[in-house]
Image (cartoon, rainbow, N blue to C red):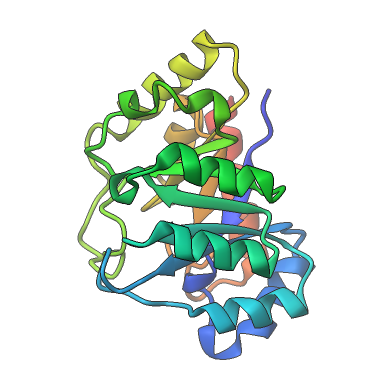
Length: 228
């Protein structure tokens, strides 16, 4: 059974006390942090700047899983490589040179991933899937997480299953990351469908009123339900 990776979204932590938030994640055994880099044009949000991510790199050894949401992917890819992150995800929808970006990332020693918006077909990865370490499936429209009424797209599970079948059919080991309303309610179904990397936010690891420790146990319990 494939290990399920927990990827806490740092934008859902206490950004005023960022170092403290990172240390709390470390103390609870989390080894990876998901960092959204948004340029304000791809979507109307800019949670963290480059200089903040540089400072984060100085205070923790956690793996940095960077999700670039930008119309200028190459600039941010190069900046993240210089910072020394472990994984870089960029969007297919804003990439004129997908293959080039994958090569840039992998040549740096980082893991390469492509993110797909909800309505983007997995068929766009026909020629690059073998080169990817991970595919990130957006289950809501990226960058609009503040719209609390937005739900996962109704075809989310089918898309995960289709990607899992494609990966298995090619005898690959590409991870499937899911991002957007990955909640305690939806995690069992997401895991059952084939997701093995969960971006955890305000509906799972960062549920207000509970500690990270309490929420982590709830997440692990939800994962077990999906694996049963």
